Image (cartoon, rainbow, N blue to C red; front, side, top):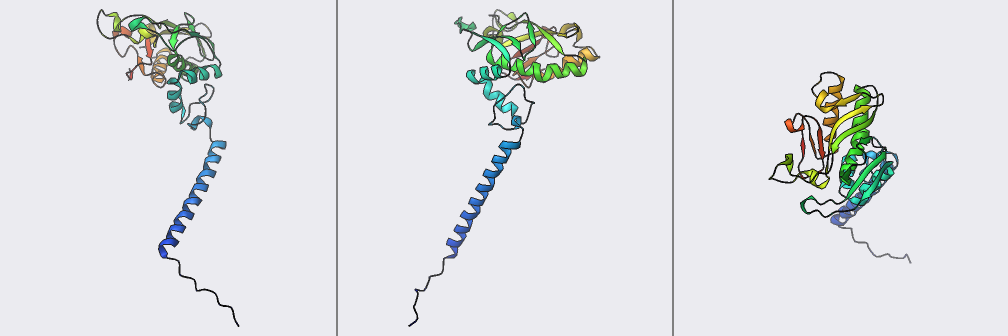
Length: 248
């Protein structure tokens, strides 16, 4: 006698559609995972936001994001500087009321261009901005416009307990917390000196160099002020990591 099997009920169309959707979703997830693995393995690290920020890498699509994260994290800021070969020493936090300093270091030698006077006290974000600016803006601009690298950058200081423009009243300057650096001039490897006060308006290579490094500084600092801003900055570039963004 032939064996009889129970009659199967047809699968509802909704169930088949749901199963198909889940299958497609799994396929997409697997394809996405494989793509992510390939991107992680072969894409330039400077283009990947999850890769560490490194001073010795070219500027890429994710550099700005990673730089912002590092600037906001004191430990990461220092790690990027140290891994990039920037020599610095820690400065203790000092409670001076409105002119208190915290998260500060002294930049010495290494991957950043030497400063004169040496080792000013700056916040770690300013130190980080200076390292990336001097490496990725100043030196390329010097090679292109001056035909040689910069060996030293002269400055007017970083810390000064004062209000903006030294006024008796008003809000404190970013210099009051060592969160700014005033750059006055650049010295090339051969000894050539290019100064903001003497060369910013120059139509030749000196002026082009200064305007390029001013413009490029806006990628690494929140505020960059030059002779184009006002007469108070006729002889220097003010670079800071304050609350306000301005590039002029």
